[in-house]
Length: 397
Image 1: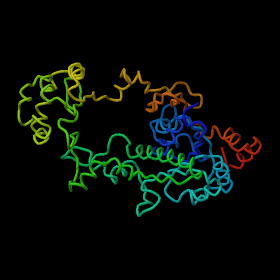
Image 2: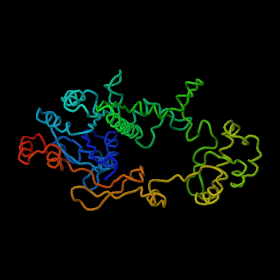
Image 3: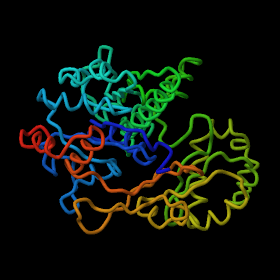
Image 4: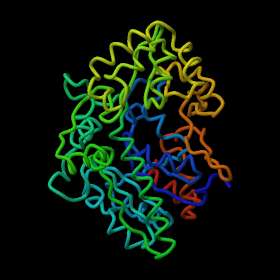
């Protein structure tokens, strides 16, 4: 098999990051993902910069392995063509503002009429219903409204956006899970359904511990920097040449001895996890002073074999390109440039390691309208003459 989802067809209307990140998971796992774009789009309008050899790196990354067609959805002929394609699809995915696809005549209700087995996946800022449903949301808005931004940052600092687009990508992953669940339900019921996922609610789901603490104890969780509300020490500490994360110390006496601070093992302020939490402002400067005396690799050599705590290097992105574990696991792959351009760019591989039907990533991003003829012929049995007629009329590219 070309991946475990071989045979699944996805008609992909998603754009920006959250939706394409969701459908990329399916392309990696062997599904045929056909990205539908507007015919008049120019290459640089397909995504933000920076641009590499004229290609948006923002677009390149989450659209690998997909096919590309271009249809003018604002015309009756284009909408009719989408309905014909939807008859042959297993999934339609989109992340427009709620109601947009309905106004074009190709929303959930319209497509369900032509294909009752269709799974229609709609990703939006706040969901298809509710008082916020018409609001626009981007990653930072999702982090703010969903609670994660209030928990991120230093204790005495302002709310801070998490450094990766976790608002977009978490919602994308939840959309992928929802699609898989709906496809499984279709196996039982024979019917498709609407999958409604929002960026805000996906962020709320990540706040599970903070929410249950507020519910159970009336706490008001807020920013603590890299500290953990239940465990100490926890977080990054500077070394002689970088940073190392120390967490979940299992053997405090052994840990204290290994860092050359036997005195801390018998200090009542630090003897238990509860005591360390209560005296965190005294504990952390002592650990900083001890750990800055040696390099990160030195501390790894001392602490990792002893299994006294959880620890990890604070890798920069550049460090990941040199990390032997990343290389051994094949987590960076070369994806060729599109349009026959020379060279390739490295992207993260799929983190899903299936022993029998592995993910197959590595194909390039779709060319704009580059697969229109092929998709129309295979999905609809459309002749080159009919496709040419649609192209001359501006319906497809």
